[in-house]
Image (cartoon, rainbow, N blue to C red; front, side):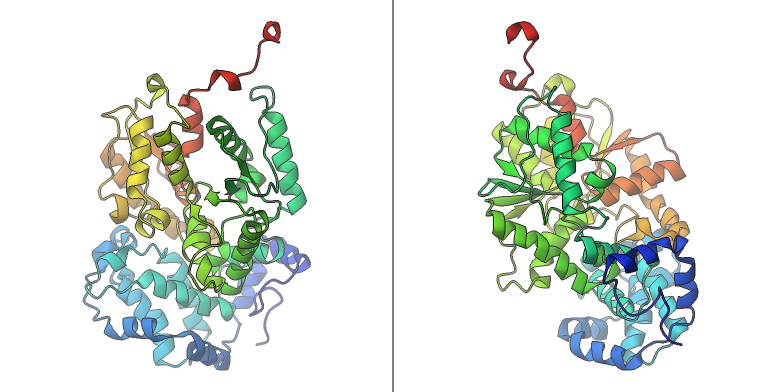
Length: 466
């Protein structure tokens, strides 16, 4: 069958196409067209020939199907140890079959592979830590997503998400003008309580260039205001770029590698234009992965590094606390049982586990922090990573995936979960809605603002003082 109007092998190219796809409520026509979408086998064989290289070939060949990866996968555990949820089975029955058949697969197979790639694996990479051969099935499944995307078999929401990056260079429809207006609005809103506070846009040679998640200006701009207040208190010389401010990449979840490159190049261009000493990203796991860990390779940077040093928000917070730029009022520390959700992307894949604990030592009263079991780089995915949170057709599977985190949190007895990651924050919020256990959840910024000591010279003057 010819490609559909909405479901096809072409990525979104402009705002008109994007809005048309958005208007297809819940992707009804999109998924109907997908039922008849042919596989372009010649293109699939060419893709394999050009991109299926030695590392993935070796991993696929040496996988002994020993099952050592089974218990490492939270989706295997929450699905009653279904053998079809064993990581090695999932990759061998999808990518393995595509390779063994040299692309001779049909529509029904691609539907199966799409379901596995986006509802049975969050690409959390935990299984790689337990494989005796070091095989990383998360990396292989991410590659499989790219193959499926190139053939038009990608969840509707993620085709839209990748399209947003292509059109707006942001995961949501926020234009540069709207972004700058939001910065001005948030700075103005704070003037009474924080005289002199600014959100500087396009300031050259600043110490810090701050980047965020497009959901912040779109849905909760107070997060941007909180970041600005904390930089203000800390006395930082900082800025945001008018373009290249969005650090996330739904294209990464969609397997749209061209869009990944487009997005990260926008951020790198801002670094090169404004020449900051370093970049600080917001409380988001995959944003850090996209811009700092994988982005340099998408952009073809020969040194494998972004144009300037980049740190995650938890690294800036720990540094500010350590150096005294931010001082915590010890009487305002959290005095309820607290636990911490380790993000797969910057804990397991970037080694920041101890940084998070260092922050907790400042903001949680001694004796009130309880670790999840397991924790740090061995912690389980929140249940909503890799795009799982946002895919409507796989919501029942995602809701079941939340059960592992629910059991982990219950075992700690914690009443508050600190989660400096958007995906984790969303998953824990949804967990509480689906399976209420009486918990609250929070990013770091609002907690810090509730207990930071404000220097006298930054406080508003009383009228009789002026």
